[in-house]
Amino acid sequence: MESDFQGIETSVCDRNRLRRRSGLPLLDEEREFTRTVAVLKWNERQTAINVHMAVYLKLRQEVLHAMRSERGDNFPPNSFSHCLLIAETERRFRKYLLSIGMVDLPIPCIPSL
Picture 1 (cartoon, rainbow, N blue to C red):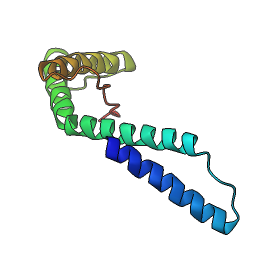
Picture 2 (picture 1 turned 135 degrees about the vertical axis):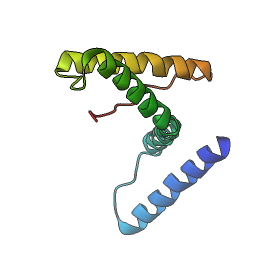
Picture 3 (picture 1 turned 180 degrees about the horizontal axis):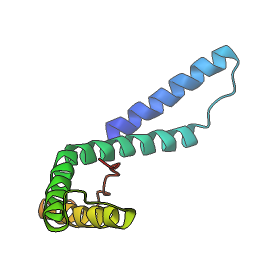
Picture 4 (picture 1 turned 180 degrees about the vertical axis):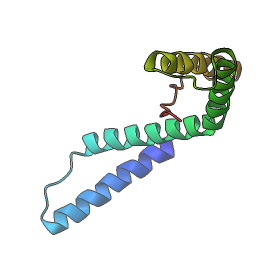
């Protein structure tokens, strides 16, 4: 990560050099550095989430199948039932994440399928 930081710093300095030549206001180097690091961390986190998205969707299908077996083929008929589906899927997904040693990943936001 240290080399990434150096690359970010170089990038900000290069951008400021171009801005100076063009007569544009200079970027606040500390602010740009912080913003770029935050974007990189967010991208890493999204990549980690995407790796496990297939598992989340598989668990959701298992939960949906089980609930439809219990409650009928038109489940979930309303928003409360949909919340039950989401809650059970998230419970199983968190259990999966714990089983592989990942405790800090947020639950992905999946639209209704």
